[in-house]
Amino acid sequence: MGIISVKGIRLYSHHGCLPQETLIGSDYIVDVDIETDLLASALSDDLSKTIDYVVVNQVVQEEMDVPSKLLETVALRIINRLTTLHAEIEYLALSISKLNPPINGDVERVTIKEIYKKLV
Image (cartoon, rainbow, N blue to C red; front, side, top):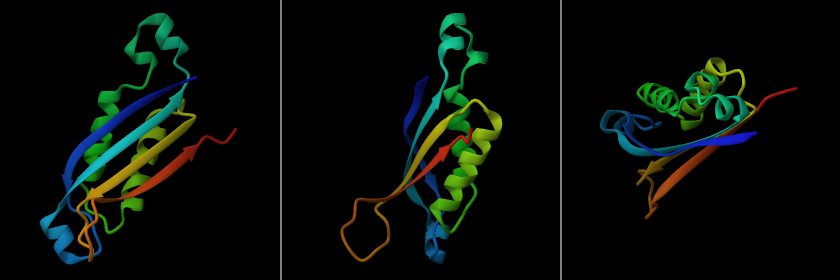
């Protein structure tokens, strides 16, 4: 088993419960950690036998482009797409951080983290 990490995906998206959040948008950072068996790809040196991080980045960008009130909803969409595309994913940790959230205070970011574990 091994882990494929795609860290610091920077995006500008339109998520939030307040109307101005979805209108104006905000900066986000997304991190993805995927646990899977890397032996076949390591032995074959074949991209088709692993999880392509270009595809991971593309899925994140596409789902972050769909406005939602809650980051939890966006995270679930990303997890569902990645695990549908790659049944070999054993574990997936996804963090979405909204930078400079519009709350009353000096807050650098708010982050949600969702975890997927394959059932045996």
